[in-house]
Length: 396
Image (cartoon, rainbow, N blue to C red; front, side, top):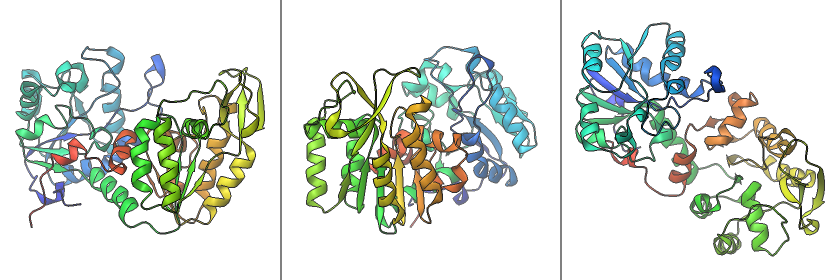
């Protein structure tokens, strides 16, 4: 990575504004953190700054409050969890800018940690408002971006603030970029991409980009439905996106580049999307017009498993079915268990895929679980991340 990191600057005694991604999943009205892995992912940067005697000012969003104060999306609960993990007090401000925040920062001693209130309580954050960004920048001497999962957003706390402060990467951002860049430039072969979920348009650039690197591409979930439709299969009531031309081109490009492309040979179909729906397993040639695809079938699981077992690198993004409903999640769970058992480099591309792996207790069996779904896809698609572009380049 040719960008400067927090190791490249003097931080002792400095007020350091650190953009983190504490957008943790909460348990509804109870406001209980279901998974604190995003908090823990930033610990190397936070502990480094504490150990170096910086005054640490953390900044994050939580949920989608759309510029309004939403009580259940306050960051106090996150501050409590971080205090427990660090075993030191984390002060939580009631806002992210303003005189009260400035007074709280004045009280910080070297090694202290302050967590600002949810940055998205201000509409100006997502608008990348210059005045708001400047108000944030006035709180600190330096800025560290350690929110890889938000680095594809051109928001005030990601991009705007960099106009006013020296800007470097945190240790999580550095790790994410190095791992994902390795997928594109120097993976151990055979290398397989396992791609599921929906939103073909969002992922097509990723697929096109990694076609230059992968030996095998396995496609399930809603992605597979669109590709099957492009091959003139009946897919019933399954959701099919409009990008059929893109799907056809992808399959043609894979063939031209000698990439083995595996699609489902059988699928689980249902007469509705609910836990009470009737299920069948059918070959892809026999999907009724009034049923819908909800998962990959057992023969496909076997085919995919055989293809993956000989690989030395696997990148996975996207579930194999509608995994939120347990009886539609078996294909996704089978892939997660298989990847956890491989003697290979296994990289999980963030978002829902990371949530699945973490929820199954398999994260520690994977080589790397990205914290950024959209950010990792954009990066692997060969597109720039605004939050990374804004970082200072390393001095030659």
